[in-house]
Amino acid sequence: MTAESTVPSPGAQRREHGFSSVSVLPAQGTAPGGRFPAHRPPPPRPASPVPLYVVDGAAAVLGALTLTGTQLRPLPVTLLLAASLLLGPPRARPPVPGVLPELPTVCGRTAVAWLALAALVAAYRPDDALSARALLAGFAVQAAASCALRAAVYARWRAVLLRRPSTALVIGPAETAQRVAAAVLRDPTCGVRPVGIVADRPDGTGGLPVLTTGEEVERAVIQNGVRAVLAVHPSARTRQGSLLHTLAEAGCEVWEVDAGSPSYARQERLAGFPCRRLEMAVARRGSAGKRTLDILVSGTLLLLAGPLLLACAVALRICDGPGVVFRQQRIGKDGRPFTLLKFRTHRPVDAHEAATRWSVANEDEMRGFCRMLRRTSFDELLQLWNVLRGDMSLVGPRPERPYFVAQFRKTYPGYAARHRMRVGVTGLAQVHGLRGDTSIEDRCRFDNAYIDNWSLWQDVCILLRTAATLVRPTGS
Image 1 (cartoon, rainbow, N blue to C red):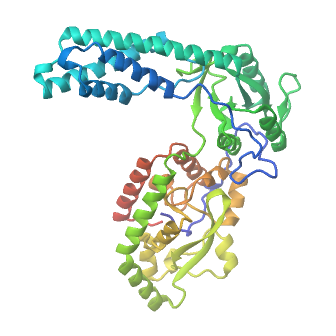
Image 2 (image 1 turned 180 degrees about the vertical axis):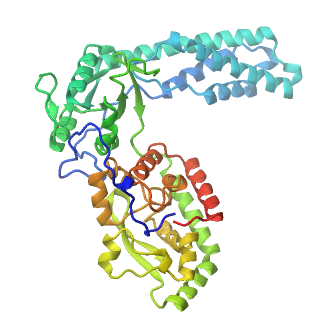
């Protein structure tokens, strides 16, 4: 939890240096959240793990058929199938993997599944214990079937990639981007066909067209059905973070390609370049779970803390006069404003000061009770009502006032991307000590890392760490 009572340090106002690319934004008429409205849904990509689960399940059933007599019962077959699927096939990355590189992994998972089955059967049905011969036969059949079926799946995927490669945009300095694009075009087995370069200025050397405005990028995405993005310079992720997030939300896969360090170790390769996929789009699968957690926790805490909230309100009214609740406009998800609620611990001179001055209070001038509320973060308990209403979440990037949002969007790359998720009472930046007079650049980086790697368990961990911080309050 944070408060609005500090001045950004000089380090917080430092502009990040790097490749100075154009700030490419979606053109007018795009949908909220930065999606390109006319972007056609991409055709199915051969990267889904579902076919691998299917073939591994079929291989497990074939392996189970080697069991004989009383061993061949529904329960052992179900246990073997469950163990094989729970170990889970890895998701294929372009270029499509082959069977030989995966052979050790497939054999290892199969061996673990059969050993687990043997242990369970020996523990619960000793009379049907599997012999070493039965284990070896079942293992051999399942491993061979899994490899053969995977080979068929991979052959089909390669055919699809060669026939319908994913069109891509390459983002980075024009010279580097043209070099990477040319290498990818020379290797059709990548399954990727670059159609344009996004850079700050044309390089004048020919090659693919260089896109320098948001309108050109949008037109290229719509006309070419772009389904992949290659970020070929380290600064592209920071300087063009908003564009990468927008393209990811539009359905594009975002890849970070290391075009300058051949020794950089990565298992995935694209035309020989080390690469890795960036999960830029906000996870949607768990959004219902996140909202359910917000409602349950905020509702329970409001009920339990009701007497405490009433006591704080009465004490504030007695010692500081009327106007117990402080209301202030903040910017939430997708840039939408909302009214944030807090207990009033300081009275700014006027509305202009409250809206535009970062430091609205000198803590030494506060009354003792107000200072206690600020130090313990009890002044922010009213934000649980914002959470219950849906303005905020328990965990997320902290909301800021419109005046500072407008400033920070221009100063810090990736700041606008924080608003692709509902703002929170606490967040990853706060539990790492980024509260009060700390770097906005660092907060932005932690907030985007939280969104990129979001999980419900991460929310629970942040809430527990926040609770531990409240036990030993240091102020906010």
